Figure 1 (spheres, helix red, strand yellow):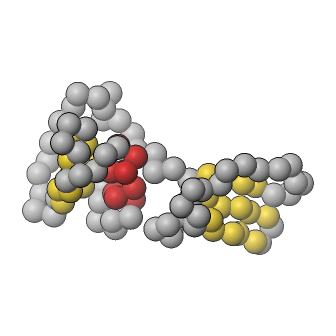
Figure 2 (figure 1 turned 120 degrees about the vertical axis):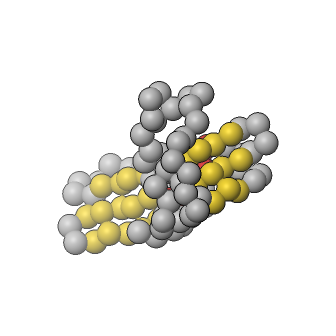
Length: 98
């Protein structure tokens, strides 16, 4: 796992981790190669996700202000080893790492 990972290119025993902030912008056909873009979207909505408040407070919960999008909040969680879930409030930009 690489915290700046934006994608991987794989062929045989070769695996190239892409860390460009703008990510992988395109691909071309090439036999025996695989191109995978990574987005912090490895989250499953709990009971539909929208308009739901997470339950289960812990002393290890981290609240971050100024997060503008749910994707940014997900990225914060993915790069925080203890994070198991998120709670995001768009109004005010609050991201809670659970």
